[in-house]
Amino acid sequence: MEWTPEAIKAEMDYRQASLREDARRVHEYYRNGGKPRSWWHRMTHRHEPEVPNGQQAA
Image (cartoon, rainbow, N blue to C red; front, side, top):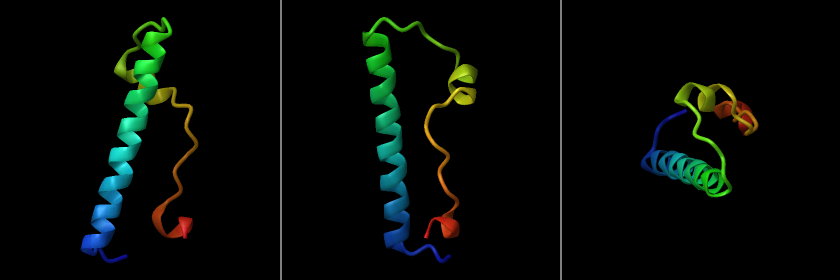
């Protein structure tokens, strides 16, 4: 796959949206009385589905 400017922008938009959604979930969790978790716990206990790999997703 060649990285065109459009592909790079789409990838950046996708990642930013994902980070914003993750931040929204964390804020909601804390607002509802959740206790803070370590970065390791957050990385190893994700509830999102796996993201398919580039060409396989098409």
